[in-house]
Image: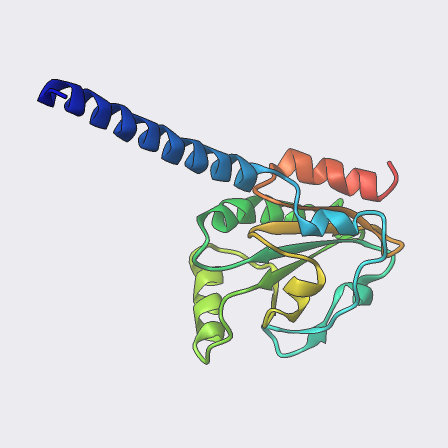
Length: 184
């Protein structure tokens, strides 16, 4: 076999390997963009009950806001898509028409280190956010089947999960989910 034939075969093998790697990367990317996940399996069922410590030291959970639509936002300070999601949640929190009907619980999933409280408080100040932050050590994330962040869970006024999924949602989509959870 000539060097030219060996070179052509080697190039074909390299091309096939490269295409295989590209296929895997694209497949993983599409899977991560997908709205499905374990959290979506909760839809239609009762929201798991929990209580977590908030930034102010109080313990609270979704059950404390029965009769309201509750949005759980699972996030971390190091997560760019989580940061992208925050302004829409802040706008909904600031909406005077929704204040009586909607409660947003921003569930931080950063590692529970001694520095986490300071890290989260600094993050919230830097991004001018006033969301109610709860600190999760992984227990609540597991209860809600959080596999990726951000994950958003919408709980209707009756305590049933009406939406659960990962990825960044637009403010318009969030408002639509709120209306649906309210039965409108």
